[in-house]
Image (cartoon, rainbow over all chains, first blue to last red; front, side, top):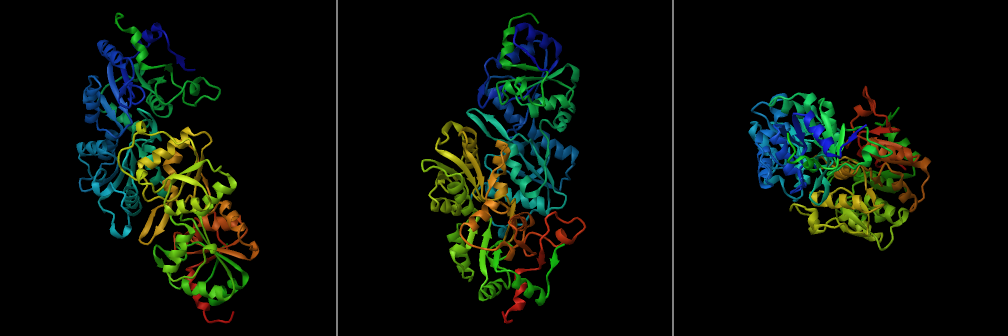
Length: 302
Length: 302
C-alpha cells in the first residue's frame, strides 16, 4: 500500500531516511519549459541538507550538456555529472556493452541530443539531423543502398520523423546482418508544456512493426540506465529514493534497482491509478501531490 | 497440405474448378511499376474463358480510379468495378457501418487515394495531403486545438508521415470522446519495385503505441473487405479462388471467406514458409511459382 504524504511531519521523516535523491524531470521538475511550483526551493533545501542529487530522464531529445543549459535557464544550479539521460545511456550501451568497433557506425532516428551523446562516446553515426534524411520528398529504394558499416539503428524521440528516415533505418535492420536495434526509451507519450505528445516509443513503433523485432531500450525502467549511474557515483540503494511521475518507467526502475519510490501527481499518473478500484500492478512506496509540497520544510532546522 | 502446382494439367484442372478469380495486386500482378511476366496473358486467357475477375488490394495509397489508371498504363484492361482497395473499404466502413453523420469528419493519416475514396462516400475530412499537415516544422500543442467534429481517425499508407500529422491524429483520439480509430490495413511492409518498405501497419503503429488502442482494419484479412465485395457482386465461395502472395492477409482472407486459396511466390512469401521445417500456421490450398505460369495453357481449348 502506497503511503500518502501530506504533512510537514511526513516530509520531514522522508527526508531523514534518504541520502541520495534521484529525480525524473518531465512532470516532476518541470512541465515543458515551466518549473513546477516550489521545486527550485525544494532542490535548494535538499542541497542545503547535503543530499546527493541525480536527475534521470528518458527524454532523449537533449544531451546532458543541453539539459544543463535548460536547468541554467530555469534558474536551477546543476552540474552535468548529476544528469543521466536515456540518450547518454544508449551511447554508453553502444560503446561499453556492444563495444561497437571504431570502423562501424549507427543509423540515428533521433535528434541532436542523441547525436551529441554518441559523439561524446566516440560512436560514428549517419541519419539523425542530416538534412538529406529530414525531408518529405518521396523516398525510393532505387536511389538507396544500405551502408554496410551500419551495425546499429538507434532511436530516440524524433519530432522530424519521416518516411525516408524510417525506410533507411528499416533497410539497415533488414539487410545488415546482426544489426542491433537500440532505443533510448519506450515511453509512448511525453508531457509537453501544453499536453501529451507521441514519445520515443511511438517513434520506433513503425520499425518494430516492419521488422517484427523489439529494440533494446536503455532508459528507465531498464537496468542499463542504472548501470550507467552505478559506474559514476556511489549510493546505498537502501538510502536512495527516486521521485517520478510514471509508474511503468520511474517507479518500476526504482523497484528493479532496490530503491525506494515516490510518485508525484504533477505528471502523467493520476491518484486513481494507485488508490482507485483497479489499481496498477506497479505501486510506489510513497505518493505526494507535488515535489514542490516539500517546501513546507523550508526554514526548518536540518 | 498445400498442393504444389507445376504442370499444364495442374493449372488446367485449377481453372476448371473456379468461376470467380480474386487477385491481390502487389507481388501477384505487378511489383512496383513492373508487370510480373506472363500475367497480362493469363488475365486475358481467364477473361476469354468467361471467368469473373476481381482485384483486391490492401495498398491504400491509390483510389480505385487511380488503380484503373495504373492498370491502363500497364496495358491491362480492367473496369473500376472490378477493383476493391482497402481505402475504399475504409470509406465504406465509415459511411455504411459507423454511419458517420454528415456534420462529422475524419482526420486522415494517409494519401490522396484514401481522400478520394472518402470523398466518393461523402465523408468530410481534414489532414491527409493538406500542406499545413505535411511539414517538418516543429509541432506545438500551443498552436493547436482538436476539431470537435472529428469523429474518426483514418490511417493508410502515408509516405509523407510526420510528427505534426501523428500528433494531431493522437490528440483527436485522446480528446474527442468516442473518436473511432480505423486503418485501411495492417500490412507492416509492402513490396516496392526495389524491395520492402514500411507499410500502412507501420504508419499507424505510433498511434497504437501512444493511445494503447488497436485500430479497426478494413482491408484483408478483415471480413469488412469481403462485405464490400459481397455488396456489389455475386459469387459462389465454393467456386471462387483468391490468388495472393501474403499468408496473413490474402490467404487468411480467403480462408475466412470460405474461398479456395492459391499462394504465388512472386511476392513476400518464400516456399520455405509452407514446406520448410517450421511452416506457417496459415497454409494455402495451392502453391504456384507465379501467376504467370498459367501461361502454359495459352492456346489450349477452353
